[in-house]
Image (cartoon, rainbow, N blue to C red):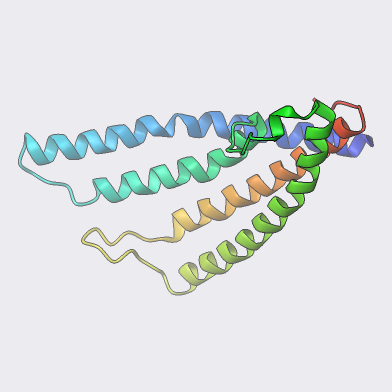
Length: 170
């Protein structure tokens, strides 16, 4: 494989690992927010209206930004009814073919998310609720997470292509 592709794969994998591991710990922040909401509502009798929505925003960032890390580790969902019976090389060939569809899907998702983010910025979109938070930060996180997953899927494509040719990129 050309050196630029090898460098691309290493760089994108490094970013996915670092952001994925950082994002992994946001689950504890979400638990803390929900615990705070439960304590203030049930023990102190002082309900906080923002805790459930904040937890929703945190978990959304968790799975959107963590998607690239999951893809990099190969922990995403796959139908293994027939796939497991193939050799490593044939699995790589199948993954190359299906990755094209994933890249197309992610590009479509990215275009839609950019459009949605631009709308949120232009009209200062807010979630209609008692707390009334701005939707701009979570939409920006959505665009960044989808873009990272697109970059990671291209990296995975190159790794599978190399594996199908009998070469490995680590």
